[in-house]
Image (cartoon, rainbow over all chains, first blue to last red; front, side, top):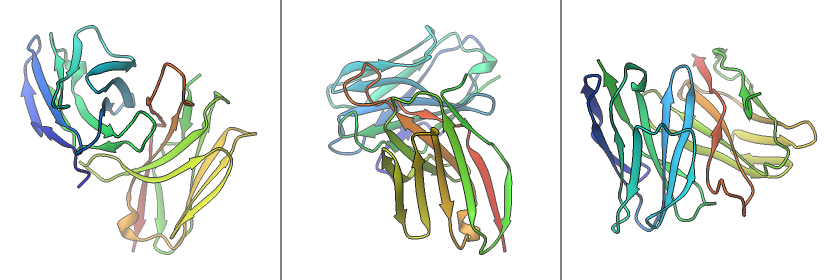
Length: 112
Length: 115
């Protein structure tokens, strides 16, 4: 158990809908990362927050947004969902931007 | 050109074999190299972390970085069925840049160790 928690574990929804994925980092970690894992693209970095502020952005779609709250938990919002958004979404956390990243168990999103 | 290339396998070996997993990367500025292991339906977990060139050993695992050829390797000695998983190499940009903690992963190599 990495200490990073993610909810929900599974999410099944329809195209066009909006969902929110939640992540609680390890105690003491200030940085949170979101990654998407699909069969064709592999594990891809989406976005990083550090102590509430956005720090780095990857190939995150405009339909996706994220934030990190004062208690350091983070949410990833996915809207206008498409079939191709079906994937595993992982959250990771680290003490600072250059410490080891610990991954959560992931949220499996299925868009029908 | 992808920043990190990794042979996806799959790789199937008998128990006790030596396993060699490899990645190449394109940007010589990268200095931090990692290997993650991912079991089915689980999140990736860090196995090895190396900085710059050289070897690092941890039990049955050895990570090797050759910066001159932009090549990173993971060796598993005396492989066990419990080593069956997907192995992902990852690179991290140097400190001070705008990419901060972003990890770039290889495609992952699926390894099966059969008894």
